Image (cartoon, rainbow, N blue to C red; front, side):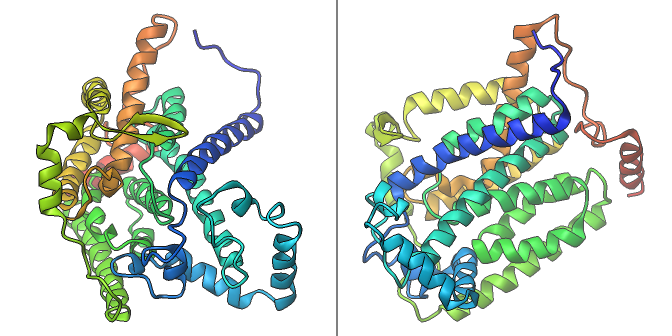
Length: 391
């Protein structure tokens, strides 16, 4: 049974932030202890990306490395010297990354340490911000505050991230959905530029924003906004690829035959791997697939139409790309479905909570985004309906 708490809004916000920080710390630690930043001689490592020598397509993901390089260049020499001197004290006790993670072999390299820590901090902050944005999106598009608060931490613990650019990608995709629901195209185009600089697949994701834009905009306006995002992202993509055209590798890695062999092998659906210090099922394990099926069954018909259309578009674009360019069951390559997955968890959790607490707890409010998504005032709903009716 749910009761009103005596906490003020500020207290609840602090408690929410602290909880999300703890969950994000656990999720990020699990990712970093398992993957690190590919330290070593690998051409896919962060250190190779920082100096621009990483192989393609990994070298294209330049947002966080560019920020780290710029920060390193702008910080006064005395500040950098103090930072490096602190790391070297009683090594590695004053170097927390090197002391904690065996994979962080470059965290104490004087030429890289500062930039290494900057990317580490930015990646973690991106995860926390993405969780908070996912909560807002769940509130807007479903309306159940309890389920909307639970869904992002659940997804964060299960988030299939391997690289430093995965967390900013999640943040940018979530922010894009939030902006699209409000038809804020003036912000979407700059976002597309920054997001594509982080990962070159964002222009494809921009195509899936059309159902959200249609909540408040005409067909012509929604199509124009999507087109502008795609063009802006494509231009950034071309410029980055031209800049690193001479690097080893290729613009994309073709893995279709490996993937077909993997998915055709029955043993692929019974594999496990060490995650969070335990041997847990891999992404294609029948246990994971069964849980996903249950979540989809429980939450799909409770989602607003715009979310279902977005999810179908994302799957139509992302699944073929995953099969052709992904690597076996590395489902981080299905990142365009991350927002949809969190909304599905939210809808499924809401349905469970309503049934578990009935009749003490009323069902969540109906959607307010053009009768599809809750969380907007009546005035905003009226303006959204007027924009849609003006098509």
